[in-house]
Image 1: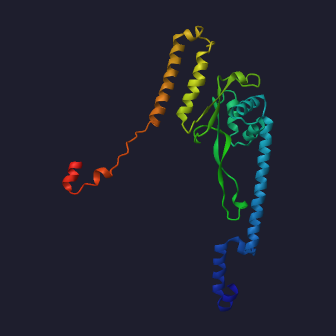
Image 2 (image 1 turned 45 degrees about the vertical axis):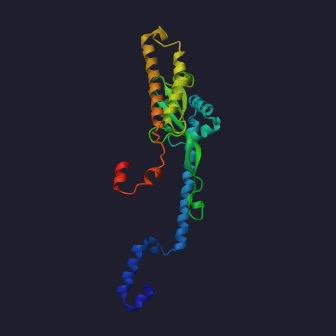
Image 3 (image 1 turned 60 degrees about the horizontal axis):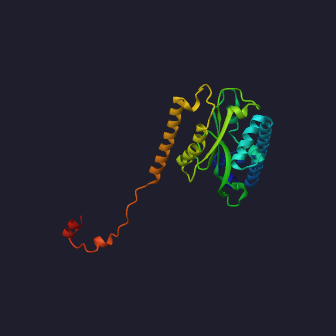
Amino acid sequence: TESKYHRRGGNLKTRSTELGSAVTGSSLTTGLPASTAVKKSVVLSSESRKELAKQVKVTKQERRAQIDGRYRYLISRLADGIDLSEQQVEETIISDEKFQIIEQFLAPRGLKKLLFFYQDVLQQKLSASSRSDGSTNSLPQKKLFITMGSTEDFTGTCAFFLRTSDEVITASNVSQEVNFGMFDCINGNILQGLEFFLSQIMIPALKSQQNWGAVKEGLKNSQIQEFLYSVDKFVGTLSSSTQNIEDKIQLTKVDIDIYVRNLQNPSDYITAG
């Protein structure tokens, strides 16, 4: 285009060059063919992926080095609870972007709870660069991940750790200072899962508890009895709520044709009404 207009008028050559530069950017000024620019872009993205993979590897190594007896206790409880190997749980934890939540939980005066969800999560099987049409497949896969419990929907199993005090957690006292538990979101019903956990696990454990700390009378103490009564009442409320949600109004199916086939005039409609 420049050569063509150069013979007819210098002003057109200048406009053409400026317009081309504005549209195509630096690739025109460097004189690189389009195919070469694309290849360079692909090479750069490939190098970026390699650098990212390298950084991820370093991060995982640093996290793995942090794993001591406290972490081993958490890992062993999770492995036993959700039927995964300890190696699988460890690899999942050090790969999780919320790994620092575990550190915050184990720290002096740290978080009071540590939650894990184990449930189906949509995972992309193929990246856009690995398929000719640029499409991806998202398939549900079971995944264990750290959560605060407020950002992800709960649809599977919840494994939780609770601190019993603000004491410094060490490898020697972690089993006393940290409680572990699990409950399922049965058929997508969180209330039913929580009701089962409380009624079948927690309440029987509380009622068989002999040592209530400073309360010497134990189960005979009026405050302990009131507490257990409140827990029983709460479980009853959960059960009623579950039934109210499930027991929908069922309207009897009626054969409308029997009533409308003989309606011929306005008076018939009034009578039917």
